[in-house]
Amino acid sequence: MFRMKLLSTLFLLFVFGLAHGGKKVMTPSDRPNIIFFLVDDMGWMDAACYGSKIYETPAINKLATEGVRFTQAYASHSMCIASRFAIMTGKYMARNRSTKEFGTMHPNETTLAEAMKEGGYATYFAGKWHLGKEGAYPQNQGFDVNVGGHDAGAPASYFYPYKKGENNFRNVPNLENGLEDEYLTDRLTDETLQFIRSHRDSSFFVYLSHYAVHDPFEAKKQLRQKYENKINNSGFDIGATVKVKEANQKLYQDNATFAGMVESVDVSLNRIMSLLDELNLAENTIIVFTSDNGGDACKMGSRGRSTSNVPLKGGKCWLYEGGIRVPLIVKWPGKLKVGSLSDRIVSGVDYYPTLLDIAGLDEKPEQHIDGVSFKNNLLGKSVKQRKTAYWHFPVSDKLKKVIGMPKASVVREGNFKLIEWYESGTFELYDLENDISEEHDLSKTNKAKAERLLKTLRRWRKKVQAPW
Image (cartoon, rainbow, N blue to C red; front, side):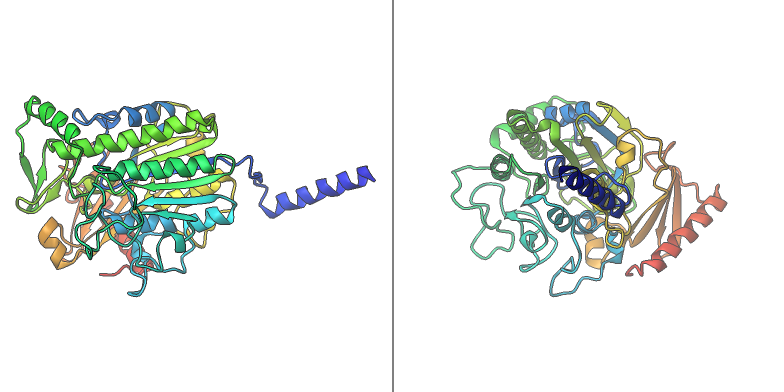
């Protein structure tokens, strides 16, 4: 009898394995925990391990020594709503057909959180949502818990009670019972640590989406003073800018308040990593650290700018590298060559299939239609690069007056990147391997490459029915 039961069990496991395409099926105890640590408006150069000489980021640096640091990772858009849409859906924003009723993400999308929850994960969200109005908040899109997420893209204040008047749409909800001078980055971290402690015995997917380092620019007083002293002794030409079309790009990281905000984010990461060690969860927890778009460095006139992305050109809202290239560090204990670099091109649409792949869950190709898993790349296997990546931004006239960038679309293929300013019918071509600062337009000297990429870009734009 025992032998018959054993054979039956083995047969069922074999059939179940075939049904899952031969993929190893993980039990809940096998599955890694996942922490997706998203910073708002943190540029490619805003951590010391990426080259900052001003911002102090020991926790981010430590994460880089324990994982893989990507040098060519991209947000899928240069603005927060669109890039967050891509992370949650695995689709480029150019495909989005959201309704006015639900704002920026249609509730029929099967989000990354819903896929994780379906796979047996406890799901948690804290911080900035910005993907839909009430009725389409995180708790309506697959998260068991929502701390502070609503439709606003920035807090009214980083200090408790995180409000400016009773009816300010930026007032952060559901963060009562705070302490005097409590700081939002710290409070979101406190809540996240509490969730991890209470779910230490289950598989969890934590999506910590900090409001920082987005405006309003508010830092703890002692940190602001610390960086004021550091910047004043740096020898910078404080406030210096350079022209990018009609806009002005910040040349130096000379904003002390912003620097203090970066350090608070770094402390948040350190606290989470320390708790994982304390609870003996670190070896079974994957951490993904990234940003939703490039640093806010390039605007019209004398408008406020937070950081400098140099040597990258442009900044948030722009489709030059400064607006879309972002930091990305992935820690996967026991799986990765620690302290290594990867030059694989990664787009924000790729996180959805990659995290499902890592968790041993079935991918949803009909949902994350633009995403490509980079799991094998993380494991150091020889795999083909992502062939192309696309961006599309039909800038409104109102926004153009603030940022200075015309309507544009972009395709990157290999080392070459083509930008089409499609209203004027003009375009630029850059070889990013040899010209990361996008200073030398090759569209006239390499016409064949430019024309081929232009056709590729226009075909894609037509295929996804990108709005103009």
